[in-house]
Image (cartoon, rainbow, N blue to C red; front, top):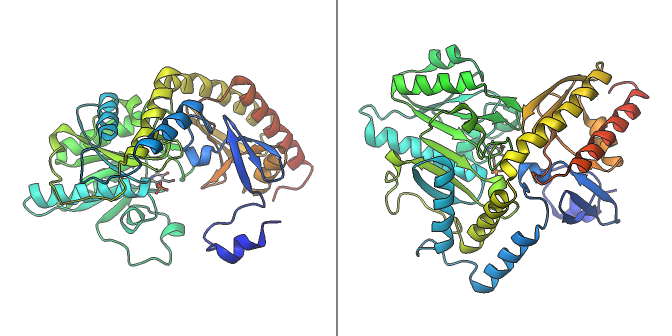
Length: 399
Ligand SMILES: Cc1ncc(COP(=O)(O)O)c(C=O)c1O
């Protein structure tokens, strides 16, 4: 049973299982009763370097002793270092830091409005966004999110967003009008159920943007920071965006987000036009710099690709063994989904009871998001537990 004080003192916008997580190391979490869990949630694609990595912990501790916060009233050396490292991984441009994925997308949306107002004669402002995407819970990011389940009850939302199905170039093309300023998509939809934007589609929208003078905006909040076997998910396709939102894995647990703006747009935000008190603090940037150290030193981007293909093969075997339950395996790198033929709630519970934590997503999807540091034996354990949970499910009628 969940601690009754949880429900007494916390707003009921989450519905956690009766599990109190109190510590973590590498790919494992422990609860308050001492039970150990293999964590294939990574805090929803955040702790990409695993829990309490010693280099990360030492860097954060060192920074806490030196300086935690001073605000963007001043130049922050850790921020400059982080911006340079990210720019070198993406391409010529500049960074603006904030605190979360939603906030990064707010900055992307504000960027598009600024471009529309400053550079187009008719102040274009509409963004064309993929259906089934997820961009966050703030009013702008929510307005860019099509699913009624997130929007319901919060209307009226911001005007200026239109939606078209992912991977359907013709549908995107047909929605462009004189007020459209840009197109915004995730390279792999995370909350939407690990739906991969095909290279053909990404190249197609790049072309559409070029033809119509539109901005190409990418939300790499979930698919970014090595998870898909590229530093950012879109990089496999070879497209050149105008702006990108990142967050989640960047701090590997310390809240930090940011946007990258292509060189051409690097000076569009002028002093006073946008800002945040906490964004890019010395502490947040030290955490993120430590994440990049670990990703680089341990070659985690390339290894995510290799480990992902091994794990995906294991999931495919399960699909072949349980064709009545599993519909499809999809995703890339260590951002993988097992698409079930029925709602997966009881399967996820079975997996948890057997010591494996995973995340659900839209459309009967179970997401496997292990840390990029996951070992082969941990992946084998996860497959073994998933199979045992499926066997347990087979003993009962499908819910
Ligand atoms: C693709 C994407 N964009 C934005 C967000 C919002 O990020 P945050 O929860 O940090 O605000 C998420 C969160 O799941 C996401 O998956």
